[in-house]
Length: 247
Image 1: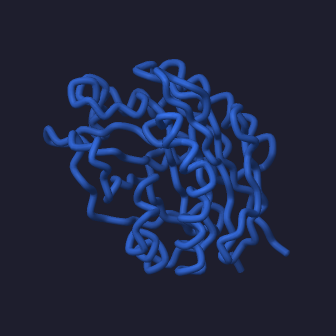
Image 2: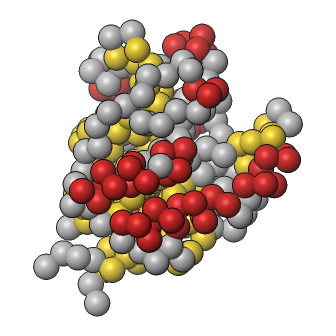
């Protein structure tokens, strides 16, 4: 059976520290490349941190058409897997919770979170769902809370993809984290069963300001079953050999 190796990074959260986030990205991309991965996913809001305060979000937001962002792209790995990474985007004054797809320093495109939580009032909702292809693998993106909505996964399926890539950030109050500890995969599994798609998620881990993140970073199969999962409570690089539909 032909396979394509996919990967997800379970990392600590970097708050307003792009340099540290980029160093982590570069190191994990090298590890994923050594393992033969074609695709590597990082968490939601990874580059600047999951910032929902508007002032902080605006202070750190990136315009994807700006020279500053082009310079940042120039520091991405020039070999190895395509990278899906969450960031805070600004476009014509509007903020978006965005995931960009970067292949060897080249921006392939972006996905903007469509379904926003109440605490995400600083952001505008995205309305498109582009598909991307690497190594014969066609995929689309849902960001974290998007996976609670069947229509978000259906858009990925309708674009001809076989995989949902899910950057997530579940740094939650401890009681909420306990409630959701085993529920994230259950919800995402519903989306897999409804669409027949695989799903890979990347989440943060650790504790911050009285909050805790337990992930999970995982791969789910089209039956909604967990095919692989990173250990909870520690940084990890999850690798998985996905059956390829390439001919």
